[in-house]
Image 1 (cartoon, rainbow, N blue to C red):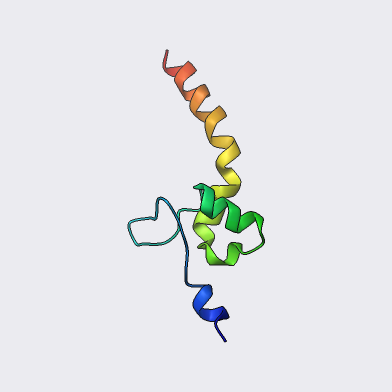
Image 2 (cartoon, helix red, strand yellow):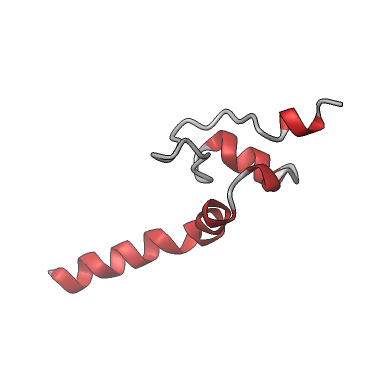
Length: 66
């Protein structure tokens, strides 16, 4: 009978201003990989999926600025 309560817990290192898990730190990534991503808000799960694209985009932006 504790499943609902456990779904409300998290161990995020960098929660959002609203107190929700970030979806990017190691504990959040582990939760998503283990199949319990429903514990992370949908918006932050998208951040997790888009993370591999962020670094190349930032490098491209830096090249365009110089």
